Amino acid sequence: MSSLPAGASLDVDQPLTSENGIFVLILQQDGNLVLYRLDGTMSWPIWASGTSDMVHLWMQPDGNLVGVMADGTPVFATGTSHRGGWLELQDDGNLIVVATSDDRLIPQWTTGPAPAARLASTLAPGEGIDTGGEELISSLCDRLTVQGDGNVVFADATGKAIWASGTDGSGGIRLQYQYDGNLVLVDGSGRPHWSSNTAGQAPTVVSVNADATLRIGSKVLAHRSWSSPGCGPTDKTDTTTGGDGGDGGVDKVVTHR
Image (cartoon, rainbow, N blue to C red; front, side, top):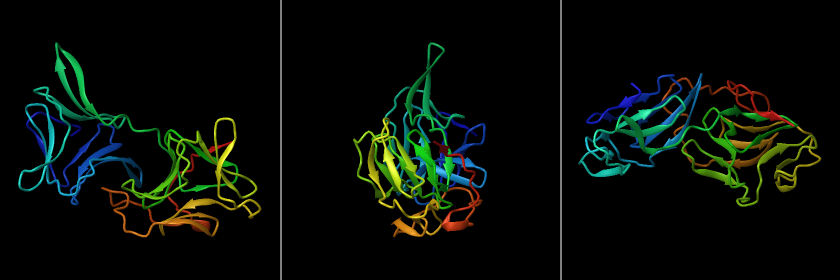
């Protein structure tokens, strides 16, 4: 089902799936309500409630979507109040509480559409990732992104930062792996704001890997030291690795410049 009508509920491990089958909302056994995007053998989180003890999600008749603990204590709520409202997971990945007024659909709360996914586990020389949804992602769903604020972040599947460039506010929009072996963050005019200082190193690949590392060739730039839930609700995750420590099973769709 793709919607949760007024008065209905979700329990642990019961999914809500978009009609196109690409997005799934699930109340996990750890108590976190997580929205995932699915792509063949991969899945990765795009939104989460950040809770740890939710066992029941209820679309109340008063229009409020509420998550509660086993004793009924609320731990999550959308704060919506239009009676008869319902929860819907749209085909664009937007999770929305919607109601009707005078035969019009009125959005009450939303996570926003999912960013356009452009995924790979490696960057070859001349390739890069931009802001706006492009990222490197490993088979464990650790991922490297350029955030809208210009910060480059390597994070685990829950969004917890493993490493960051500290360039928020810089105007950086593209992380480029140069032919000289240097990984560089540049702004719209091409001015650099951060680099890996690996110029002169024989270029290989930049990779996010199944051993929870971010590497340039064999050089480790960052390493996750804690356990992570991985890619979420499917058991189809590809944990094979490719050459130079990269992960297999993900199509390369990053951009060349």
